[in-house]
Structure formats: structure tokens, C-alpha cells
Image (tube, rainbow, N blue to C red; front, side):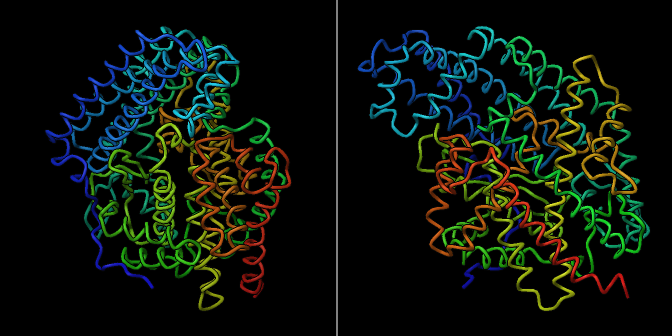
Length: 604
């Protein structure tokens, strides 16, 4: 039974961490202490030699303990300023604090580079034995991973220089983009008056059920981004240029090397995943054509792809959305449902629809406090409910790992997206199965299929665009006009040219292209969607007994390659097409059901 105490507050509580927001004296003191800790760690590193034998563990043990505490503290600080900036894009003090945290992060990364080189200095035979020692149990994998990566990078001095220059160079361009988005204002007519919407508010408006209004709003959306395009192109070019220069000096030829390494994923796995998706796209093109028929148009425009059908346009209150999520989580995982209730009732979620917030949604971890915070703008759509479930999946992932060593909690984006998409899938599947009529089932099923379209086509377009953009960027700066062309070319390829119009300025409007923490912020989403489909199939098969197995899988996400994770917990080989095909087949079944239910509507 759902025990949520309603009504729910839609604003988050950040004072639980540091009272006073960007003016918080406690946070200022926390940053000062963090700076001191990093300096002490740097001094420890200068006076510590690589262990000469497996018995020489004392100094390394002390270094690892200090490193893990700093890692937790700096993530706490980064999450706090990130929340402040998302909450109010006009908070200039938060911008200053963000710069301070980035500087501290650069110092810490430089220190970690020296730490990694110290690990690389341990003889191979001694290293194998050293990892068996008690102080390093539970973090063997991340330590071994860092040691191996150190051998592929430049000298500690050169890597430290890169990190230092990145603060005002690499990360600075990301900050420029955020500032540009903060100034985004799209004028729209509301009841005869012109209202200026932020990027997040404007994006939500694009999902209106009125097609004429939708097309007009999209034209305005494109026009507004066109006004910002030169700034965005400047930022994107220099972000890519910085990365390419770093890769050149490290001797890395492929722009996919770093994101694959970060995601602990083999190139063969990525290739096979996209190949399987591409071979199955005809079914999804048929779906797009059927949706066009239902909307009474020859071909869908870009803005029609996510358009609601029928009653999906009706508003779902925040309280009702929360109840729906908790009720559907409970049969699969009572622990995940209980966590979600905790998040809702303790104001871990910022959902209020108001001006001044940044667009998009995210979940961020506060490892010192052992809590998470979720950010989104809730507009009452079914898509908003899905986003909320998605972010709660992220939060639960972190929740079950809170008691683990900090180094073992560093899981990659692709498995993070697995947990979130699994949560989203539970809700989507449940609402379809519980539909009161075929009409309602069509609407809900179509909303569910939209996610497959997003992961198989929209995300694929982003991957194609970014891959092609980097190839052109090697030759020099790429103009805003050319970026538009590359974007449309990628969208046509990914959607098999099934649309009547595209989104040329998508590269400017999508925050993910400007993220400086994770390059190629795209394919991990698709991986997560399909991997979670495999997990979901197992959960349906095994019922409530799967909960502990799911938790075990999540707790392993920071400690192994994804291919090993899949083999251990699901018994599948990700480098072969079989698993990917079985996962895609689940989405195809949804399309088949949708096509059957709508056949009479288009042939009447």
C-alpha cells in the first residue's frame, strides 16, 4: 500500500547539506578544508615512494584512505554547486563557487595522476600480491584500472598541466555554454500576452497536443537557438579542439577510446549494439509512418515524433505521478519503492515549474551525507512521470552503494543509465498493462515506444553527428552552418529519412554535447536502455526474488567491465549480437502490438 504523505513539496532541501545556499558560511568553510586536504594529499604523495614489496602497505594504505575521503568531499561540493546553478541560473555567487570547485577538482585530478603513477611504479609481481591485502579488498578493480591507465597517459607533470589548463580552457567553454543557455528566452503568446520562457519551460511547451501550435512553437524554438548558435558553435569547437589536442599528445587515435574506457566497455560491444539496432530499424520506421497516419499527416515532422496521442496529453499531478511510481516499483522491488517514498517525503526532488531553472533533469549524489538530489521541471505530462521514475532509478543505484568504499562507487554512465532506464521501464510497462481500454492502451503503448525511438534513433543521430563532427574538427573550426548540416545528415541517417523535417540546431540545444566530465554523452543511454531490458526480462521471470540479485548487480557496477558484469549476473555475451537482438525484440513486440491495435483506425 502506498504510504506517501500528501500533498508533496515540489522544491528540494539543499540546506540539509549547507544552510544558506550560495552564501552559506558552512560551505565556504567546507571548501577551505577541502583545499587543505588536497594540499596535504599532495605533500603525502611527494614523500611517498612506490611500495617495494607486497608487505610494504602502510604508506599506500594511508594514501588510499586520504584519496577516498577527498573524493567523497569534492563530489559533495560539486553536487552542491551543481544544484545551486540548476535551481537558479541567475545565482552569480553560485557561478563563482562553481569556478572554485572546478579549480579544486583540477588540483585533485593532478594529484590523482601522481597517485596513479605511483601505482604504476610497483613491480607487477608485487602488485598482484599487494591487491590481496586486507586494506585494498573491495577496491582491487579500480586500483588496478587506474594503474593500467597511468601507463597509457603522459607524465604526471604533463597530465597535471592539462588539468590546470582545463579549468579556464576546457571547462571554461562548458561554462560559456551554460551562461548562454541561462540567457535563453523564448517569447510565446499566452492568453494574448507575450511571456518569455526559459529553455526548460520552452522545451516542455513543445509537447502540446495541438499540432499547429506545436509547429509554430518549434519554429520559434529553432529561431531562438539560431540567435545563440555562434556562441554555442564557439564553445563546441573549442571543447572538441581541447580534447583532440590531449588525445594527440597521448597518442590516442580514436575519439571513442576515452568514452569507451570511461564506460568500461569494449569497442566490439559498441559496434555490435549499433549494428543490431540498425538492422531492425524498418519496424520502427513503420511505426513512425503509422503515427503520421494517426495524426493525419503524410510524414512526421521532427516535433511530431514525441507528440502525444489522445489522452496522453491530459495532466497528471505531481502527487499522482509520485503515487504511480511508488505503486509500480513495489512489486518488483519493495526496497526501491521505500527509497522513492523517502526521496519524495524528505524533499530530495526539485520539480517545481518556474522560471530561472536550467533545462533537463539529473540526479546527483552527496556521498558525505549519503543522500541524493533529483532535478527536473515537472509539467504534468506522462513524459515527466517517466523522467521522474528515471531519475529515481539513478538515486536508488547510488543508495544501494552508499556503504561501499568511495573508489568502488565510481560507476560509469552506461550502467548508471541501466539502473535509471530499468526504473522507467517498470512504470511504462505497468501503465500499459493496466490500461482500462484499447484506446488508453494505444496512447500509453505509444508513449512507451517513444523511448525506443529516442534510444535507437535520436541517440544514434547524436552519436553519428558527434563522430562526424570530430573528424571534421581535426581539420579546423566547423562553422555553425556546417554544424547544422552535420546534424541534419545524422538525423536523416538515424531515422532512415522517415521524417518530413529535422532539428538543425539540436547540437546547440542539447546540453549533453557540452558536458566536460563525460565525452560522447550519448551511446551509454542506448546501452543502458537495452541492458536494462535484459534485466527487466529477468525480473519479470523471477519476480520479487530478483530484487537481491538486482542489488548485487548494481553493487558490482563500479568494479568490472560491462562485459564481465553481464556474464556474471545475466550469463550473456555482450560482444555477440544475440543479447542485443533479444533486447531489441522486446521493443519490437511493443510496436507489433501498437500496429495491431491501430490497424482499424487507419483503414476505416
